[in-house]
Image 1: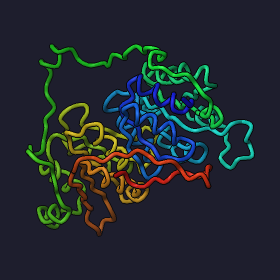
Image 2: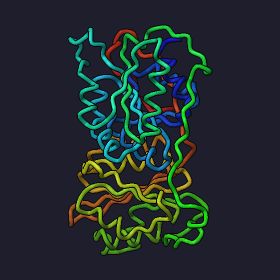
Image 3: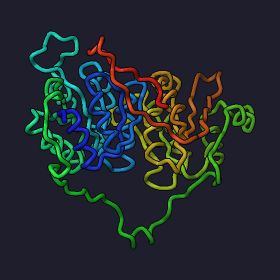
Length: 360
């Protein structure tokens, strides 16, 4: 077995259930190994979106969530999302290809450990076939037990080495005990008020219907948010973006519990909420994910709208625009998610990213 496959199999044995990423030649084999080990892979349209999705998923589940990236430019595309995860202390494990130090003339070459270390992420490395399982388990353990974002670099030459891998060789990792109230405290505490309406099916609220319901007041963010709070199901997770408008969803959307609010704003970047809402919808499929996004931030993350549609997730988004234009509301009707296993990249372009077409 190659080291790349052993790393993916080891992470599967350690309990990784979800992987977000963009597949290229440098992370192709480890991604397929993760899928073969039972992890579900979500193909993002951009590495930034993949990192933000993983951050939101990790926050809401407490699980170590993997981001799979190509070396060099694939990693740098994800840096803002990785920094958000670092500052949020999210248990995210970034698994990325790495250009060997003997190939510093490669276009993909950068000092990856130095780059991610400057962001506050914890750099780890698979050093060789003999230590591949231990290196992988160490990176996973640090993400889980220290609740930190770890970047595991997989040098391309090491990925090709042969290793005698067996499930029994994977060390046991202590389970992390998640903090929370005792059953008595939870029973005696005041419940959060859950607004909205309960539905037996999935929601489908069209922007035209919302504007018709509100009339001329639909262009006011406060009026719109209060109305949507009553229209959307109470089983929700609200994901506001950064920007001046984000006080409206925070003030006027009720949430059912602590998992009902996910704010990707630790790094103060805009353009996060759509990808974060996708991660939230994957993490909590029994809820509707509500993304509240400004017009500039929405355009920044527009590519991931395709990801949401492909996965047919239960989500709703609204975007504030200029004062003369009504906020836009968009919904997706959910179907059974479709997943993918990747085919081999073309041998004629070993350095280029593999096809990132939609699954299924």
